Length: 128
Image 1 (cartoon, rainbow, N blue to C red):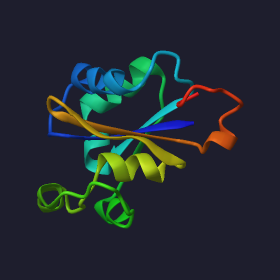
Image 2: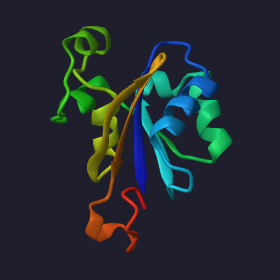
Image 3: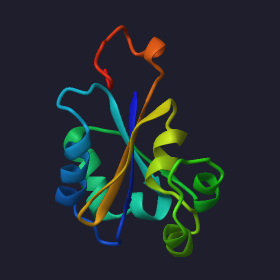
Image 4: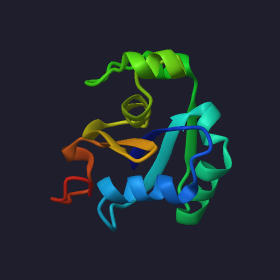
């Protein structure tokens, strides 16, 4: 399963979140899960985005996210969210390796993790 980790401002809409996801995730990428900060995934926008696509939605505490080593930690995010990474850490907690690093689109930051190539059901597609 591919995990799209996301970080977003309070009140982010489903359309904003899905536009950011669509910018990094190819059509037909397979099974996808959205993951982020627990407080954010409980909001209406992320809940609606996951429901529209039929994707599971997973929330993590700041402590769980902070325990993950990421390539692009941010002091600003740490000050705001209590963890130096939300999108990359949430993606990595979903399992696998980071295949798309943090990418900012509007009010949303996304990152993608996928199983290692040997566990990707024989597809040559990077995210397949």
